[in-house]
Length: 428
Image 1 (tube, rainbow, N blue to C red):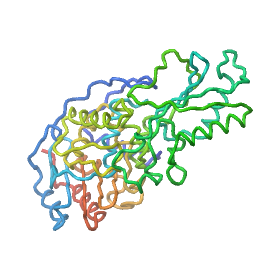
Image 2: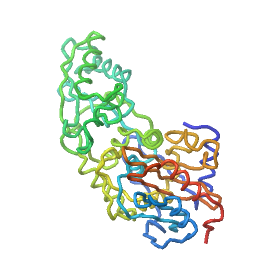
Image 3: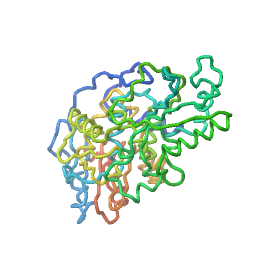
Image 4: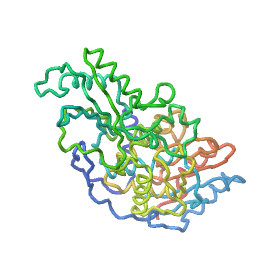
């Protein structure tokens, strides 16, 4: 994604950031790796509480006016100074700003070269297994390749098609795990609220959500095998524990890989794709048990030095209204990721004001065009936006969350312009 203008903007952002990022060797493309330890938290992640830019603080309060009580706003600089803060420790529903947590965790735990895989295995008894990790772009063409390979190797070491029906197991999550408990019924019917499964064709959406993805996959795979002149008996194998079923004696016949981590992060942050964010949370946490995954995400946040007062991770996408984040926590997370060895990957995954993703139609041909890399969030009654703002005085790590504001979009634009004002908060 992006072009010359985007690359120039990103280069400017990295130039303004403090320090040079070390080059890292690429990890194994399939398994998660232990990345080099990031530098210790400084400034805001260490809970700096004193507001250091009274002029910006005054302007932020003026912009918020009588609606200040429904807003949380925090602004920090690259040195970790808390430039302005209004209700920064007030927990609020973050909407899709929750994805900033999931993507940060995924980048840190899985590395920049990680890809989600869908694999076909031959078992010792000659039957086949299909396993997946929730590739959001897995499609019919890839399913056809699996059908062809199954026909050619279904229990026969010679590679010749078998005359007997092929036995295929689909390893899938049980239905009670397909949706986070707090997702409302109306949302579950929409494409953006499609069920979260390991084997998902086109992210389990066809205009609207696919209500029973394993049944659809069984039907389409069976049809494709018949079209190619074969027959199959396809069954479901629930994956009810954190690790996958024992595959130690199975032979890997074929795998299809998703787009790389940069593409996955961009789907979640630039395009705000709920399915991808949910899968990234589960894969990064090492468990498709959402209770375990969100607990590990909370533990990871705490380890980064993020202020955790009132923070509650419930899902990976922000569609669940049970999530709670503070603007102080999000600003701290943005600053923490700016210090990470893979900081450029994180920033490059975000939408860009006036140019890309959910921000492409906002602030075009204005002073903010190309100068704000951020993540938007919108559900009924909630408007949030957090990201990195390029200002003449250096980068600003800013988070704004409103729960019940009357005209949040105009307020957000005004706050960003104030935070970008030259000379208002000079470096110490």
